[in-house]
Length: 99
Image 1 (cartoon, rainbow, N blue to C red):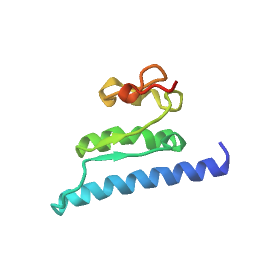
Image 2 (tube, rainbow, N blue to C red):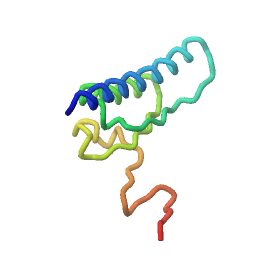
Image 3 (cartoon, one colour):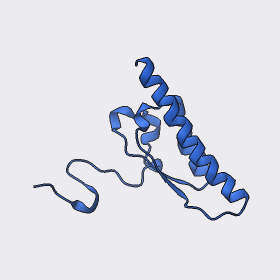
């Protein structure tokens, strides 16, 4: 991994942590906010950061939506308890086909 990928991965980790922190803060202050996060580019994050996300979001009742390739995901995260829906080339969201 080159220096740019390392800094991009670190920044992606910081972004998701900020978003999670805001939801936790909002809960503490009784501020209404969505209970889900939709993030992208998490395959750039380091595995040690990715591995902490399931426990953190589950503990705080947050749904984290992460489009990520299986081969970029640590095996521990692929536990079925962490996955709500899995999509593929043949099983697309809303079953929309490109012809």
